[in-house]
Length: 371
Image (cartoon, rainbow, N blue to C red):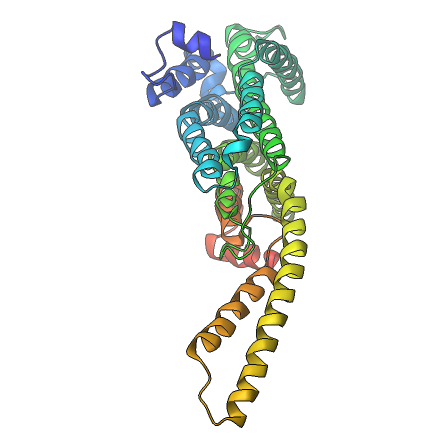
C-alpha cells in the first residue's frame, strides 16, 4: 500500500500520507458508485437499500472511515516513535541493552512492511467484501447494488471490486499494525529494564505508555461510525428499540477498552517484580534508618539535646518513597486515558439514538446505564 501511494504521488516528503491522500482514496471509493447511481431512478426513492444515497453505510465506510484511516497514519507513527524514544531517553533501557532493542525494532519494522502480510490482507479484504455485498443484497429486494434482473450493476461492481475491499483492507492494515505494535511492546518488556520503584508515576517510569491506547482513538472513531451507520439504518427503517442500541454500545465500549489497553499487560510482570523487590529492600532500609533515628531520639531526650535535622529529614524522605512503592500499578495505565476511547466509541451511537430518543432523555438513560 505504501509503495502504491508513493507511485501515485500521494505521499509527502516524509513518506507519510497527507489529507490529500485521504481525500483521493475516499473519492475513489464513494464517487464512482454515486455517479453510477445518478442514472438509476431508484436513487430518488428513499427506502431501505433501494437508494445508494439513503445507504448510511456507504457514507460511513467509503467517505468517513477510509478518509480517517488514511490521514491518521502520520499522527500514529509520530506518537509511537515518541513513546519508543522514551525508553532510551529516560534510561529505562541502558546502553548495553541497545542491541536487544534494535533487534526488537527491526523485527517490528519488517513485519509492518511485510508484502506477504499485505497480500493476505488483500485476499481477506476481497473475501469479506464479497460476503458483505452478498449478504447486503440478500437483506432486501431491489437493492442499489443490483439491476432489475438481480445482477450486480455498475455501482455494485465498483463496490465489490474497489470500495468495500479498500475499506476492509485499511481496517485489516490497522489491525495488523496494532498486532505488530503489541508484539513490539511485548518484546521490549522482555528486555531487562532499569525501572525506578519510587518514580511518582507509580509505574517505575513507564507511565508514558498510558498514551499508547490513545494512538487508536481515530481508528476507534472510524469503526464506531461504521457500526453506528448500521444501527442508524435499523433505527430509521426498522424502529430498533433503544435498549438494543444501549447493549450494543456497552459491548462495543468494553471490547475497545480491553483491546487497546491489553498490550500494556505485557509489563505487568516487570512492575509486579519491581514492587516486590523494592518493597523488601526499602522495608529493610526504612526499618534500619527509623530504628537508628528512634535510638538517637531517645538518647537526645536523655541528654536534653535537640534531634539532628538530618535525621528528621531522612525519616521524612523515606516514608513517601515506601508509600509510592506500595502503590505501584500492575499496568502502566491511568483511568483518564480510557475517556477518549469511550468518547470515540460512544458519540456516534449517541447521534443514532438521538434520532429515536430526545437528547436530554437519552443522556439521562446513558448515565443511568453506566451508573
